[in-house]
Image 1 (cartoon, rainbow, N blue to C red):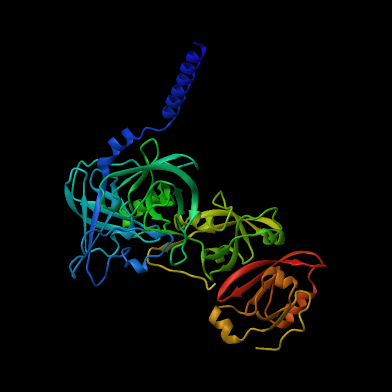
Image 2 (tube, helix red, strand yellow):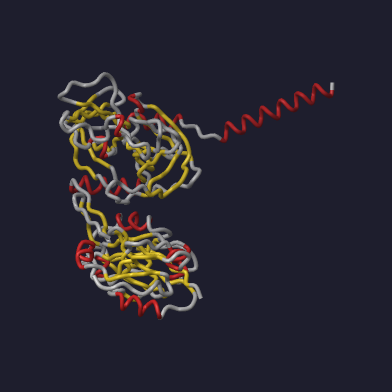
Amino acid sequence: MNRFFCAIAVGCALLMSSLVSAAALPDFREIVKENSPAVVKIIVEHSARGGAPGQPGADEIPEYLRRFFEFRGAPPPQHEQMGMGSGFIISTDGYIVTNNHVVDGADSVLVRMSDRREFDAEVIGTDPRSDLALLRIDAKDLPVLKLAKNGELEVGEWVLAIGSPFGLDYSVTAGIVSAMGRSLPTERNENYVPFIQTDVAINPGNSGGPLFNLDGEVVGVNSQIFTRSGGSIGLSFAIPVRVVRNVVEQLKADGRVTRGWLGVTIQDVDKNLAESFGLDRPRGALVVEVAEGGPADDAGLQAGDIILSFDGTEIPTSAQLPHVVGLVSPGTEVPMEVMRDRKRRNIDVEVGGLGADDSYSLVAGGGASGQGGRLGLVVEEAPPELLERWGINGGVVVREVAPDSTAADAGLLPGDVITLIGSSPIKSVASFEEVEADLPQEGSVPLRLIRRGSPLFIGLKLKG
C-alpha cells in the first residue's frame, strides 16, 4: 500500500512540475492574433535585364550572411522576374516598412494583406546602408504595429517573428535573443547597424518582417541570416528599432537618409596596443587616419587618439563607434573622451553628414637603413609615387624583418610603410633611425603603418 501511495505522490509531483514548466513558457497566441493583420507580403517584379537584386543564381549565392530573397515556381518569362519578402504597416494611412534589398531595383511592388486585399505600393525611399525601405499604399484605417519606444533588449529574452518564409504566408516562429550589437560590415565595408542576433527560425521570405517582444511591440526588422544550406540554422539578424525609427522618420520627411559622419578610419585596440597607449585594458576605437577637412580634423582629432566615449556613450570596441555616430543628427556638437599621449582629453566635435548616395573612404627612394637596429628592421625611403598613390606625405618602407626581433614579434611585414612611432612622425630613414635610437629599453610603443594602402596601428613590445 505504501508503494502505491508513493507512486501516486511521485506522479503528482511530476505532473505539477510539468504544469509549472508549461506556465513559465510564454504564450504567443495574443501577440499573433493582434498583430498578424498588420504584417504584409510583398511581391516585386524586376525586368530581366536588371535582374532581381538579392536574387542571384544559385552558384552566386555566398554561404555566409546571405541576404535572403525568394523566387518560387517555374522560371519566369524572359521579360520579368518575381521575388517575395515581408513587411509591416506602421500607420493607418498606409506606410509600410520592409528591407531595401526586397524592393531594390523593382519595376513594381505589390502588397498583399492578410485578408487577401492587394495594393500597388509606392517606394517612398530606401536606405541601403541600413537595408531599410519605406513604402506606401493608397488605403485608410489600416491595422498597424507599434514600434517599441526604446527597443532595449537583453540576451536571453523571448522574441517572435511573423512573415512569409518560402512564400508560406503569415508563419510564426519564436526564439530568444542570442546577442546584441553584432557588427556585420557591408560589401562597402560600412558598419552602421548594431544587429540583434537571435535563434528565431528565419528563412527566405521573412526578409523585412517584424521581430516582436513579449509586449507585442516591434523591436527589430529581420534582415540577414547566416546559412550554409539556404535555410535557417539558428543564426538570424535583425535591424534594431532605434535604427528603424531614425531611418523611417527621415525617409518619410525627405525620401532619403543622412547620417552622422566623423571622418576617421579606426581599428580595434588589442592588449599590446592598450599597454602602448597607457590603457588598463583593451577598449575604445583607435584612430589610424583622419580625413582632411572632415569633422574630426576640424575638431583637432589626431591619428593615434583612442576614442573612449562619444556623446556620453562608452565605446568598448571600434565597431561600436559607427553605430553611435550614425544616429547623431548632422550639425550636432557632441563631446568625445579620447586618450592621447597617455592622458585623457575631452574634445567637442560637430558631427558631419553622410548622405545615402555619398561615399567616403580613407585609403587608409633613398638608401636603406643599417642591418636591423633595435627593432630588427631594414628600411628605405618610400618612393614618391608610392606616397602619392596612398595619399601620405612621408614614411619608410620595410625591406627586411629580422627573425625573432621586436618587429617580427609585432607582425611587421616587408612592404609595410611606417609613418609614426609613438608620437613621432617618420618622414625619412634618418628620422626613423633617430626615433629608434631614443626608444626606451622596455615597455610598449605604438607604431602606425600603411599596409597595402590601409592604415594600421600595432604595438611594439620592446626588449631590453
